[in-house]
Length: 376
Image 1 (cartoon, rainbow, N blue to C red):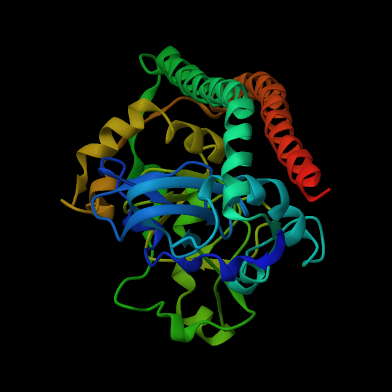
Image 2 (tube, rainbow, N blue to C red; image 1 turned 180 degrees about the vertical axis):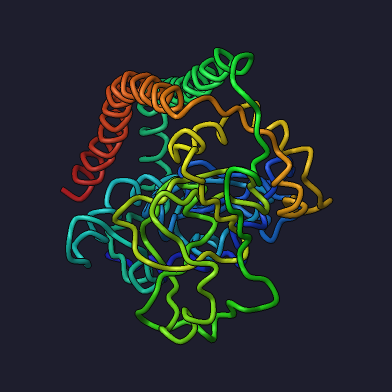
């Protein structure tokens, strides 16, 4: 007999304990964060069959993994499954979870998931024998769809590489003609506060925003988790984030950057970020673009230390990195060219993304049809 169950009754639900900056791109274990792609870690906290759900960032994204892995503190781990096949549960979550979550918040976006939202997620579940029959039937139907989805994901990766190569080629055009300047001579650099200045017990419900490493990694200054009071902000003004500042991740997943938009909230950086404020002869968008290039990253990696967790050695080391710096006019021209290239690639990616989403919707529709026919 089919029965309505809550997610909390058929599996354990817990979160990871690691911060984003504890990742290491050269680690041997997958490190699941709330980004669309996982990174890696040198250590693991879990060794099991699990379904992982992003609690913020790419909210509601679900992933299946069986083996040793690490998880970010906002990633939910479903494991210890009871009376449910993980493959069937994954398909149910992919088909129904986002609608469940969307109905629980105002607006068009979900800033984050609370554990209770997952625990109280209800759905119809057939007996185990029926689950096995449904999974076997769907496996055959999903096999070809999964191949097409994998091909679409490979295309995304190829587009990202194409964009990176196009960016490198732009700088190859000017590096022989332009002057080279030390980063410390053309920018002000401030590393986030150390020494426990940002312990969780100082955070308030509303106040000035705290910019975290995830903002640089995800290349967007939205969805803040932590805030500090006016008094604490006054004490830490040297770490204030301003529009057109560049934020760089400098621990774990190092070197990822984002440029602070004009409408970003006033706040400060945490210890995992470097704040770079360009001088007047530097176009912020140009420098942000250059910091994503091979020329910059090769120098950056020379200044990295840490056996388990990679860290930028010091601000002093960063200040010595050389930047290819043409005239302001040429900087603006290169930014325009890069934006044009990006627009073209974005249009291709948009088409691929729609196909990708349609394929996932097809899987959900097949699952829904199967479950509905079984109930009938």
